[in-house]
Length: 576
Image (cartoon, rainbow, N blue to C red; front, side, top):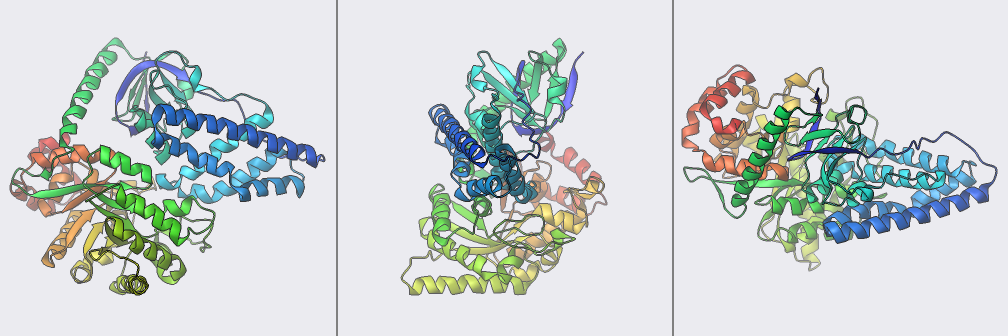
């Protein structure tokens, strides 16, 4: 009898193949001490050397078989192994506290992860935590003298099943034999997603029990479209998913035709569908998936991967790469958006009872200009290399935007006085994610060059409901008339001043919301790269003029369910 496991779809596609369990040995470490300091130090040096050689070999394999993009993912672990402060802290625990080598490594890793793992709600910020866990596992395995699973030993096509799959695991895969990936734990971490997409594999993560339910050799089906895993499927289920896999392949080929075309509705209205990115490799995904620009660069990646604030020159180098990788297309960079529940080790921020409503984002930048000014200078210096736009996050009042804009103008004047080339056409906008800003959109529209609606936060603030809290998650309703009325108010206010409006939250990639956003006049849809071609295809099928009766019904509905019913009846393409 078959069994069904539900998880998160991390990479699209369908695969049917036998399972290959990638389950490692127990590497748990107990608190232990040693009187032989020199012996422990020697063991540490040996284990670091072995791990470094191992990861370098993996990186070489990744570069040869998967290309520069995959190799860059493994570089994160090489950087950690080369981190002198991290190694010094481990050695200090051995010399000062008389820890064993294993316990010193584990304790140091745990201390570092306490900071980084608070960022797990943002995939692009958790990549360093993932890399530290993997490096720690490899160092401790050498200290214990035990072998880790070796994916290179696989000699037949199979679906890998594991508690977690790390970037170095995927870097060792032979694409001829890996049909798909399934994990017990995890979300859609950026590095893992990058690697799986490089391999073009269907991936389902967060099943919680795959490694206990699935045995080696069991036939399984991975549905990376809907986030499902069918264990020991029936003939009927196999036949069904073979047909779905063939249909998916056909649809992907058809969607590929939109890559080099403009996004235009049936009645000739032009829209832009752009990408949200968190790291430079995400740009490659964006281009491959037909992005018409970058609607959101999450600049936090520069800060999460450093033990100290990145220098101005380091930031210039990174922003220049983003701009030069998207020639002729606009790249919108959001200034540092951290605080509250998202903390960085190099910035001392207060403990807060309600972090979502606390000291975060632009509030930090205005209070600590030594953080904001170098970032703005770096962006201005990089602006000469492409079409840059700058966006301030978490703006609640007009005064906040004016202060941020004033700092930007001051730094621009200083650079020009010093003879530094700064682009003349930099647009400056704001994330609109606080209800007070939406209510005052007509006032803000006179000050900004554009709005980018951050629907995720806007919706949870509008309903006073933390979408991460399962007890109130039902209140997070993208299609609720209250949300739609607020979005329309923002779009109308911007257009009255000749300004454009983007949306960069999850709502922008929801096919059910697409006809509503089109009909209300949204100019730009910004989303994860994997959704771009689907939304572009849907937009090209619809007529904005014919959507107006639907907009009228939706805005005057009483519930989100009513709105969804209207959409399904009026726009069947949105539900396909």
